[in-house]
Image (cartoon, helix red, strand yellow):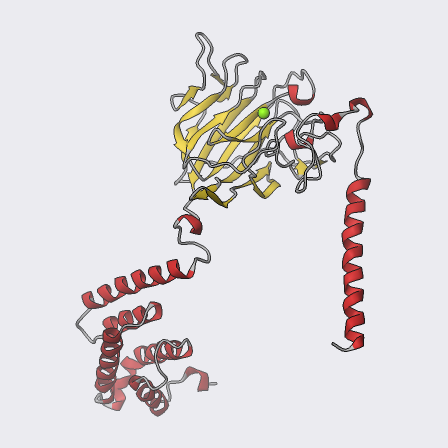
Length: 405
Ligand code: MG
């Protein structure tokens, strides 16, 4: 490396360090330790190597307040499962039933009745997109965690906090929209008590294989349309005062709404199941080479089967399917068949009187486009027999659209 390059690298390092230091200073300046709450750091598990804050530390900066137009009411899409439509609770059960105590419905909302315990769906739900709307009691009572507290427990295990944090602060990792005990919401976008808020949640549970965590699980949450959790790793799912540790979840569990002694109301609750991730056999996203190879073989086999079913006529349908199968996996018989079919078709065109060839123009140009794709991507050799013939035909008939003005 030349000396001036060394100098430039050093300058870059110094600049990078400066940016990182100034970011830390910004965090420190945004702290406003609450003088009424001395000793707030002595509540949950202390900071550790990966977490600069103790669990539930009130010295942590509060989420910035953002005003919105309120709940974003989304009617259930056609593939959603409706959990509460304002009419009945037959799909729900109390977690620990008590005689004479039930959650109630009024004004098409379901309401938590203090003393009745938490409620959960009878249905078990795994990875999902969940929509839920909730309102804290309009009669403001209590403070901190004691005001309008409830919670959305995905699979009954990890809580997206519900809390009336409208002009009421609490420890940030237990504020409304927090992954409780794991991560505070990025913003406080709440409506005043009595008015509805919406949560739109994308939940992915942790995945373990052979006792090892291969995916920590994630929560993404929008509150009244504002992103407040951005693909937040679950870190075990969270909990009260304890630093959570990677934890194996079952495949599904009930959706639980917490009874924390406050008459929080809910409406319009639905979910959509999500497809499996690549790590658990899903086919979306970038996959492991071995999995990809297997899937490509399956796709190619299906296309080969379809090619056989398309036999007949001018042979073009079978030709395209055969060629398509070669996009996914090589196969000697498909290659031979596609050569045979394309050559036979072009022979028919060549034997057609010049003035009647126009009817073949579209098919010939399409064949040229497909063969060009196959050669460009190394699926067939450049000397594929029909290629030279198709080029000659296009030239002879002056069919190349690019040549026209
Ligand atoms: Mg709660």
